Structure formats: C-alpha cells, structure tokens
Image 1 (cartoon, helix red, strand yellow):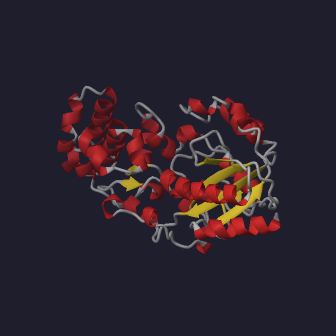
Image 2: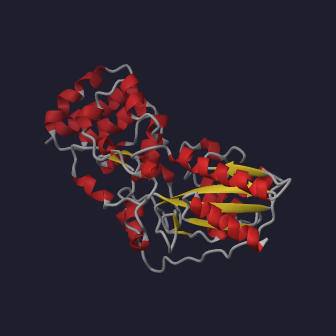
Length: 345
C-alpha cells in the first residue's frame, strides 16, 4: 500500500492541494469530550446544528461505519498582502480573505471528487465519501491527527509548511492506507493570535467563544448584534482575519496559486455607501458564486450599517435614512444605532 499512498500524494499535488496526509477513523478519541465541553459552555451561540448528530462529529466510524482510512487535504488561500491594512480604511468594507472570490466549497470538492474517482479506479471495489466543511466532520482534529498541522491557540490549524491560511477537505475511504504521524503543537509561548482579537473571543488558549467572535457574529449570528460588540466590529462586514494574520508561522506561507482564491478587485475594500444601497437582486448578482451570498442580503446589510456607524463619517448618514423606517426591525435597529453614533461626532 505504500506505493498506492505515494501515488495518492502525487495525485493530490497534481490536483493543486498543498499537503495530503492520512489518519485512521479512530484517531480523535478525545473529540467527543472537547465538543461536549464547547457546547456545555454555550460557546456555539446560535449554531444549534452542532448539537445535531453530535455522535457523528465525535466518531467518524459513526458517520460512516465502512471507513478504514481518512485522507486529509490542505489547500492554501494565502493573501499576497497584509489584509489588516484595510481595517484603517473606515469608509470601506472589510471582507475576510477567504470570501473575496469564489466559494471554496465548490473548488475543493471538485478536486476531491477527482481524487476519489482515481482511488476507486486504483482499488477495485473500494468506496469513498467526500467532505468539505458542510458535513458533521471534525476536520481540524482529524487534520492534526493526520499530520497536516496542529490546532493553534486560535483553534485553527497551523502548518509549519504553509502557515494557517488554508482550507481543509477529506476523503473517507474503505481502502486501508498507512497512517501519517500526528503533528505536535509548535505555538510555544506565542500569544499573538489571542492578543490581537478585538472582542477577546478566546476565554483561554485553544478555546473559542463563538458568541464573541466577529466571524461568527457577522456570518452565523441572526438578529441584532449585542451593542457591546458593534463598535468593536469596525468595518468588518463579513468575517474577521485578525488571529490568522497575526500568526508568525505565516512567514513560511506562499501566496495562493488557485485563481478562484485570488481576490476580485471589487471585493477588496468595497465602498460602504455603495454596498448599503444593494437591493435583493443586486446583492445576489454582485455576490454570485461567492460564499457571502449564503448569509442573505438583510444580514449582510446589517453588517454594512454597523460598519457605517463605525466609519467616523457623518456624511454617510443620508445612506442610512431609508433604513430608519425599514420594516425589518434588525436593519432599523442597526440604522438607529449607527446614526446616533455618527451624530455624536
């Protein structure tokens, strides 16, 4: 099987992946305890789907009993500049690096399916299942067990080879493959990712309280965002990259070479006054094939309104006035807050 494993790695590189490693389905025995602790502390916020099929997340064998090996893949999307510089341009919206072009789910899954078809052709009678972040799979613990990297203090996977700007994908297979060695923690005494967090979303190293995380608040959270976080969000209108950008291991990272991850010009610091005017139809067109479309126009506009409130630019108030009488209470509430904040200047 070593020759098959070597062929697998070469196939993954040809498909554009940066790293390919293998672990067994029983490689994350402590996953259940850690997930339970996360949920019992209510760190999941409104993400109630984490409760459903909890046993599937904790044990890959429960998710698919036929699984004999899990192949883990890393696909980098490293930016070619310091993305945090955009945070100083308060009249423009900050969109997380991963969402500045096409939806990564489609890009990664296409490549995984190609590798899966190849594996089935190589091993007669074999079966596979492909996963990219949308199924109850704990990709990060599996990634560490397979040796892709380790879960850093910001809870994201970090690689000595490619930093921490990368997506994960997995193939569950009935083929028995040699396992790779798990990666060990290389964070040391560094706390850069914890120190930079605007909302103090890390109650302790290696623990994330999603309820305070700007990525969660701007993407997953439905309804008004607590007032204590609104000013801290700044001009981040979709996601947050602060903890990722702060990681020193990024000095070894190479810029993304996948064209679908290279940013669209119009998504690098778009003007807030233009975004806030988007109708439903315009929103869907502007963010076609983008992961941003998933959160819907109203939640996105809510984020833009908060960003305008943090812009320190009273000339943007007229763009908020239509929302002061909006039938959507969340948008009306956001607009009132933003106008009051700008009028205080």
